[in-house]
Length: 366
Image (tube, rainbow, N blue to C red):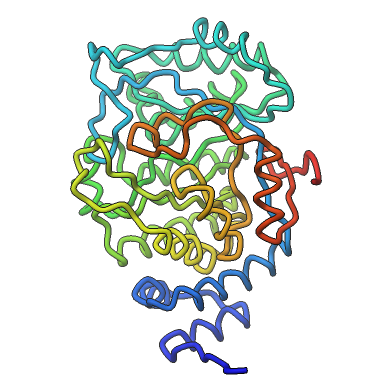
């Protein structure tokens, strides 16, 4: 049988992966500049199986978007609307609980809560939502508010990050999602989302949460104006913070969807792009336990393949239409995917399906 050798430009990286040596900034650049997707994926799979064997996780969750009215005007966002727009909506605590009373939440382990930063809502509106959800559903983990929202709450209250997180945790908050990171490089960030918090502030919010004993997720948005150097820098900053705190549970590469945004002239990332970012994330972020293939941005088909390109988690059921990616033209996220669909998708990829909770405790083995 013909044996195909990996090209020499990945030979040093291949040696590091097999010996467990940490990759450098230059290694990260070399990976992004390489076109040898299959070798990058193979190396990522070595790390993935070293950490998780054949296990692949998904969760049963319900997403809540309290409002799409937002004071920020990020160029990549198709979800937000201005106050007074007929598409705008507001779901404070009373409205949210009323709507949830119509839903079968059997087996749901998590509420994932993000949305716009409403120009007229005070901190009490956001705090009340957490408090009332925790009161009504004490057994469901509340993963809520990106670092961008937490930063906005500090401006609303004039208080510190720690004070805001303490109040939220007292109300029932369990952990933070990873949204709002986008790309940390200010030269890119000031073009795509200059009015919201800096990358440094995002890291400060997550570091504070970690120091308080809270776990969080981490993300990186790709496929817009970023360069390989800014992506490696982004991941390096995540890795450095994880070395310090150990508080990130998951890394989630997020593919940018340009439709209906002010960057709509940009092309959508390809499936190969998506697999490459997932694989490099697994190779570079050696201290973050899990890497997610977020099927909502990458499609279920690509996410399934990603289980052999470094990913060990597929996020989970939506239980409601995903609004942020749907607004940007993600037609594949209309409606929910069932637990059985996830289990079958994982089995077909040659992995063992495990339903998990937010902290990766196994709820059910399929």
